[in-house]
Image 1 (cartoon, one colour):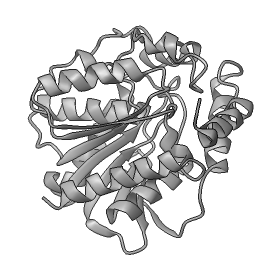
Image 2 (image 1 turned 120 degrees about the horizontal axis):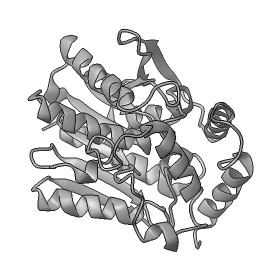
Image 3 (image 1 turned 180 degrees about the vertical axis):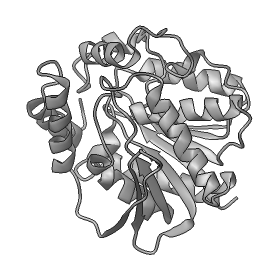
Length: 296
């Protein structure tokens, strides 16, 4: 790895979290402590706005407008993560775009299985529509598993003939639960997630459901009719080849895609933007993209 900042952060991550050991509940605590360790200190206005039984949070940076909304889905391999440990990223997206973020804590496995998380994300979008936010005023954004859920939500909305949001931003999404991309081999040791961890999370989340079910693996879906997408991925990600394959399929399906490949970056590097310049720039680009799309 040539990027010194990324290498140092990767070393801290590998020392801080036991990705292959311990139970899922300890893993959640490890994730939270790790992400909070890299969080910046921001002045944010955070308001609880639950969607039925789903915890929801409206997050606004200073001077952010709330007439347009970024609907955000956190990462964590469908088994961990929360708005709390992604608050820094939400705040930066709000600051860079000038709009408020609405983040939900969707149901996690193993307590809940697929497609419960998808249903929660879909419900949160419908809730925004019901509360006066128009589809054209919404951008869906997500990172890692949240990026997958962003795509799953788009597919669900399209198939149910619900008006689609203006666009979506997907950071390091899991798009193929088969994990067959060659980068699973070539990037081994360059990323902080492992094949073992991916397979374990897949097993816990899907619990016997088909690995190629489109709402779990969006790469197997018909992508026609989706709104514009921004996709960000690091060149050192295990999931790199899967994401590139999805991007190519989306383009072939006449979906407008803004694709960013970040050299030497690992999975979900935007979370660590307080220490990695590329993470700052990628988050800034996402904010600019959101601002541009919502101004059309």
